Amino acid sequence: MIRLGLVGYPIGHSLSPAIHQAALQACGLEGCYSLFAVHPDEATGLSDLVTRMRAGKLDGLNVTIPYKQRMIPLLDELTPTARAIGAVNTIYRRDGMLVGENTDAPGFLADLQRFMPPTRRAVVLGAGGAARAVTYALWRSNCAVYVTARRLHQARELARVFQGINPMEFSAEALEATECDLLVNATPVGMFPNIEDSPWPAGLRIPPSTSVYDLVYNPPETRLVSEARSGGSRATGGLGMLVEQAALAFELWTEEKAGREVLMETIGQGAR
Ligand code: NAP
Image (cartoon, protein in one colour):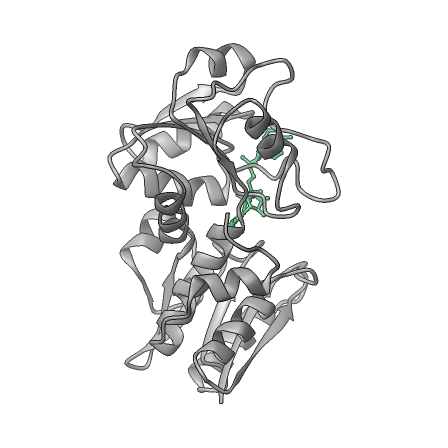
């Protein structure tokens, strides 16, 4: 019996239980995936879960907002990816140690590779946690990366950590002047319930040669994705990355590989 779960707050609408239950079933494993909604005011909530994992009462844990950074001091080791990004979304046990990993970065890259040919110049909108994982993944792939944030100092901080990244103003003028073959939305703009919002400046055209990857997955087709497609661009939402980061975590916990197509079908998405 494999006991897995997700800690965060709020997490009531998470798709992770459905994805991991499907993965367990597809691999013929008995287990469960629980949601641990730990309110930020709960002093021992996180450490209690870590204690349970050390005692073998939990076999794997996903971590989401607001604990991706706060979890780090409670762990024994970080993978190089998690250390570079400064955030963990997956915890697993190896040789009695608790190891923190970040599967968002390889999850994004794996789905991006299915979505489009190798990208050479990318613009990332936003400079929060997800932007950090995406920027790291692109930077490691030798792609030129432009990070734009409404608070420019956030983008500059990313450029300090990942040398060679270009911070830029979040303005229509700056975006229009920056040619790229990939645009990534790593802000929550357009996410349910604000589905009429788009992070892209009104009136500014996305060139058809620019592909658009929106990390937002609820709704599956955001306004940004829909407008990019109407303008002739290749565009996708974030469900592929969500499934991929989950599948990579599942592999770390169980050493089993779950078919991505089965997991996509579980959350109502067929082939793209
Ligand atoms: P986060 O750490 O809060 O960062 C959000 C970033 O977006 C910040 O730079 C923030 O700037 C910026 N932002 C917020 N509202 C904005 C606006 N109206 N205009 C311009 N910039 C704005 O959040 P996160 O964890 O990075 O998540 C971002 C999105 O990615 C969420 O929708 C999340 O669900 C999605 N995500 C998807 C996956 C996946 O697997 N598909 C994985 C991770 C995250 P300020 O700091 O100035 O607010």
